[in-house]
Length: 287
Image 1 (cartoon, helix red, strand yellow):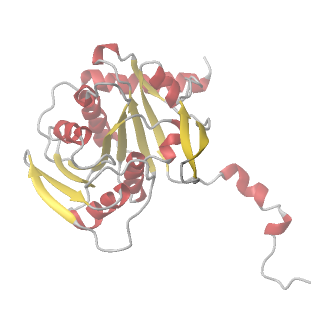
Image 2 (cartoon, rainbow, N blue to C red; image 1 turned 120 degrees about the vertical axis):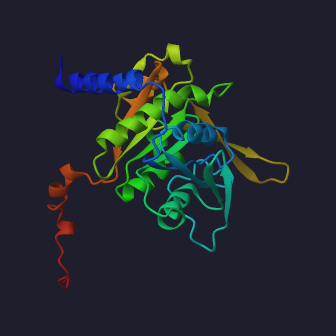
Image 3 (cartoon, one colour; image 1 turned 45 degrees about the horizontal axis):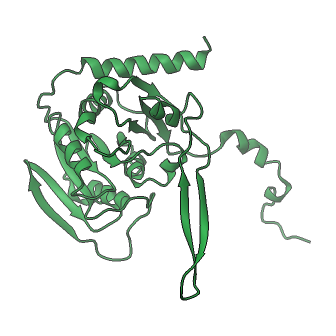
C-alpha cells in the first residue's frame, strides 16, 4: 500500500475510534469553549452545537446577530459594534452586529475574561468543502482563532430537506475531546464536513485534503423592463472527484476532516522566484 494511503487510513482509524469510545458526555467544566458561526446567533445549528459542547466544558457563544453567510474572512471595522448579551440554558450568548471573524476576535480580545481552550464554529447549514472553504465565514471563524494559536474547528452539515443537527453532536463532542487531549499544531485548524445521513448510515471518518477543482458557476445575463442588464448566478454541483479529497468523502457517506494551515506560502517557489530578473532589483538607480 502506498505510504500516503496508509497514513490516510491510519489517521481515519484513530479518529473513528475516538467517536466509538467517547461514550456518554459528563460535565468537564475545566474546558473553556468559544462558539461562533455565520448563520447567526439564533440559528438552529449553533444551538445544537452549544448544547452538545455544554457537556464537555463551559461554553460562551459570540456570533453575528443575523445571517452573515459567504462573507469569507471579512472584518467589521468602520464603527462601533453593538453587542447584546443574554443567558441561554446557563450559557452566555453574545449576539454581535459584526461579521463572523470579527465576532471571534471580539470574543477573544474583549468579551471573555481569558482565552478559551478551543474555538468551535458551526454547525453550518450546508457543506464547506473544496475551494468553497475560502468563501466560508464558518471556516473563517476557526481561522481567526488559529491566528492566535488557539485550537479551532469548523463544523458543517450537508444540506438536506430536514436538517438534523443533533445527529452530528456525538461526533462533534468526541473530536473536541480529542483536540483537548492531543492539541493541534500552531497555525493549524480543522474543517469538518458531516454527511446528512442517520448516524448508523455514516460509513466512517476520512482525513482528507481540500478538493481544488474550481466551482461550476456561470452567469446568465438578462435585461429587465427598464433596460438594465442583470446577471443571475447559476450553480452546478461538482461530482465526487479525487478519492483523497473532502468532497469525495462527503459524497460517499464519510465524515471529512481536513487539516488546514494559515501559512499559504508556496515554499517550493521561494527559491525559483529569487531567480526572476525583475525581483533582483535592490533599490539601485535604474539607467
